[in-house]
Image (cartoon, rainbow, N blue to C red; front, side, top):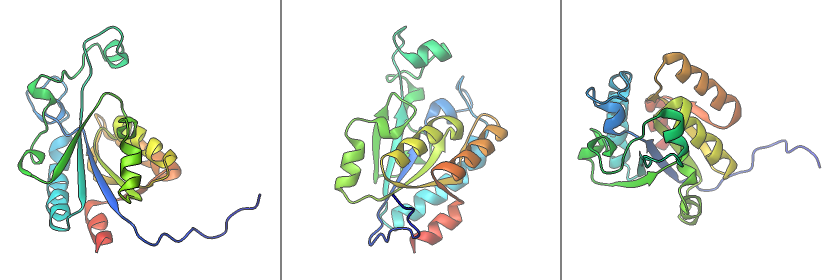
Length: 194
């Protein structure tokens, strides 16, 4: 089997943009899981939402939760979880003011582990999955690997995702750049849509 010398031509590219786990648990300063770096990326998330809405690009927001149970790996590892019935489970601003957002709940790091999602995206013609949100070194990274393995062209928007520590964010971006995704800024991604 020989090497392919050219990238295959893709006639039509259709995006689905995932805003991963932008929830009160991470974005509310009163939450035990608050990430101060969410303040830094909030303008990028807001700008992205405005432009995506204007261009009628599919936006999918995810909410992470897990049961309080010794059977749940998140509860065993972290000793706490985001409970589905809590205020901390809900989406945070600015997602709360946009109407054309699909919301999916997940109990895994990767969005692509949501049952039936990959086939649904492929059936609707999505070829490029765009990732942003929380956290770069956990759910974004896991989603990049799974999205790549599922056959999607991946983009990660570096200034619209963050981690608990800046070096975790930067290392994860580097890993994804070398293995599974193009890394873009909000502005560069918006220009790529035109």
